[in-house]
Image (cartoon, rainbow, N blue to C red; front, side, top):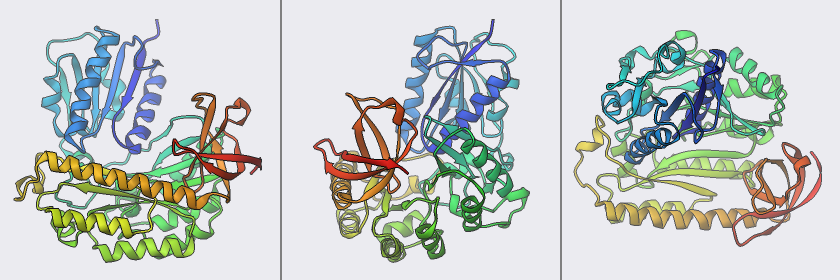
Length: 439
């Protein structure tokens, strides 16, 4: 009888791309995939470890797997598994823990699915994670996440990702072009380029420490040599988002006017403590340049609240900086103490109640920014890829500049790229549209 496997992903788009690749490896190894809440022989949980909450989520998902099948073989992979393998091995019901080097060879570790009293741990020293493994995911029928880079050479004082994923390294341009075309040939309309630090693309290509190619060169070749309709950059550091890339995007036929740029703090003092590689002046310049050449561009921002030493005055610098900036939405993270980071030893610890208060303030600001951006787009004509969801008789999609829109559900529209006019902002924060024609 064919064995079955179920998958659950915590964390970033990069994790989703890698889960899909692990799933394809298992299918090639003779497994069939099922939903996570169904009975399966193997449950694979791909973890994140950016915050303490991500660690707690892993424990909850292990329990969910065992509820679906108490005899199911539970495998935990990903960043948390690399950082704290022994801790995960102590969780009741976990059978196998695989680190950064081992997770893509999962089939070779599944020689027995008998549950044991003690979990097996196979986790390399992170210095051994110096190779590159290609990955992409197709989460629905309209969008794919394509991994182009992994690891990070930065030393931000709050971050465990270099400890969990290793040094910066990249896929080859030719392989990325082939994967992108492979995805496009399946009828997928949009590819999102993902990585840990994609602006650092080219370092570690072919195993070399230096940059063989640049992210700009990769984008130019994807634009010229593939047939995918849309290419979207997931997130890029402000110091690596050069003006030439901004200008290129403004004239590209495939790259969309949407940037997600981590800020983390609007206080130069805090940015220095975080060991970020820019100050607020540079960030402001990048936003201004984008809006100069693409006034309709969507700009998302990552920000951390409650970092050690962030007094009320320093937080207000962040709030006011963001309030005055021409951005479209925020992803707000509450600072979380992580073992083996420099910041865990810093003075000026912010009480958790205050961290949560600041988080709420910025989330409210984010919603105001998003509504203002959506309203600024009303009356314009945009291109939308319609997704497969059906919520209360409505289907949704995103414009090229990341405005969420809706129209009455029509199955024939799924995965269609269509021109629409943005008509009205609903009370639920989604834009109604007038369908025009296929794009």
